[in-house]
Amino acid sequence: MQNFDFYSPTYFAFGKDTENRAGELVKRFGGSKVLIHYGGGSVVRSGLLDRVKTSLEKEGIPFVELGGVQPNPRSGLVYEGIDLCRKENVDFILAVGGGSTIDSSKAIAAGTIYDGDFWDFYQGKRIEKALPVGTILTIAAAGSEGSADSVITKEDGMFKRGASGDAIRPKFSILNPALTQTLPPFQTAAGITDIMAHLYERYLTNSEEVEVTDRLLEALLLTMIHEGPRVIADPNNYEARANIMWAGMMGHNNSCGVGRSQDWLSHMIEHELSALYDCAHGAGLAVTMPAVFTYEMKHNVMRFAQAAVRIWGCQMDFAHPEVTAKAGIEAFRNYLISIGMPKNFEELGAKEEDIPKLVQVLLYGDGGSGKISGFVTLDEDSCTEIYKMMV
Ligand code: NZQ
Ligand code: ZN
Image (cartoon, rainbow, N blue to C red):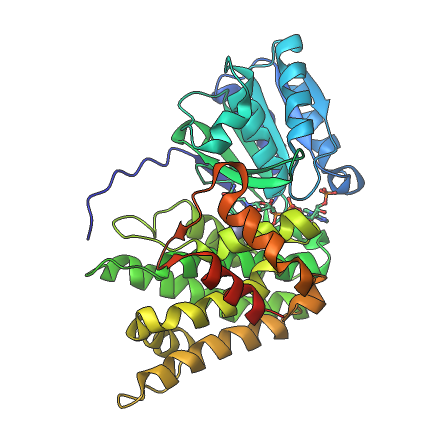
């Protein structure tokens, strides 16, 4: 196991009706003027936004609002949010929505008190300072409610890039599984896929002797395999949604990723798809992961065989471990298809003729070096091969 630091100070309020505690929690974490940030309207339609406002009013906390975050959030609205926060002397950002809204909130939080262009953080500068952020989560997926990360798309060039820093970990996150019951089935399934990707991208490690995190990741993946079909069959299954929601948080606050190298190549390769086609990140991952894993398999067949046996219940073929490894990848692919995810470029809405462009932006766009590394290192040829496998 490698040395590590782990700092995850987020306060979680989990369960039914917890959104009514928004005002109390903003106060506890020192907010005196709030920006309520939200997406395209689901929180307005569900009545959640009104309940949050009532909760703030009850505590006498003034607020301003900025809606309109779109999935795969854009830099334009971040600049707007920064201007608004400076003008209104906002000292606390409250994200009400999914990963896109939370990530946009984190970008605004960092950008408001930064002298330069907030995009510097998305080009590799670590975020050391930010306004405090609180979240009220409405979809179990990105894990941003407990993570130190934010992903934004810069409209000029459509570069989708991530920024990190413990300063943007939410001060609190309100997780009420019942709020996810209004999700369309496709979004629920995309969320499940993203959560499983976060677990898998940690599972694919080059570190030795990481039994505790291996076992935690397996437990969470087994939970997702069990709960996914239950929630697709019955969207109102609160208990299944509760287990998925907490697995989503655990999967990405990095408690299961410490002390080990991680992969993230599937995420990098997918981000170009959701940047170009504006598809749901989870749907993009459903098409990306089987291709990336198939390419990566030869690097460490035994790791994939271990996943196949422990996670997918495959029989170990000691004479031909690659057969077991492949069976595990196939089982994962079939699972994703069974919950309604796309299986190839066509179903995702991607085009084979765009592959050179995807590879170009992935490897050279916005200061790229021509190579990306994770479980293995990929160059132009290997990225092209992987995208072609998805067709
Ligand atoms: O915008 P509204 O109207 O709210 O609708 C949203 C949106 O259309 C809808 N939705 C959310 N909750 C709902 C609901 N509809 C009905 N009822 C509800 N309860 O769902 C759609 C998707 O929302 P979004 O926030 O985009 O989903 P998600 O949480 O999957 O976030 C995706 C973004 O997170 C990034 C992705 O790349 C993508 O940009 N990621 C962020 C990470 C992080 N910060 O740590 C890590 C992830 O790997 C990921 O890259
Ligand atoms: Zn993800």
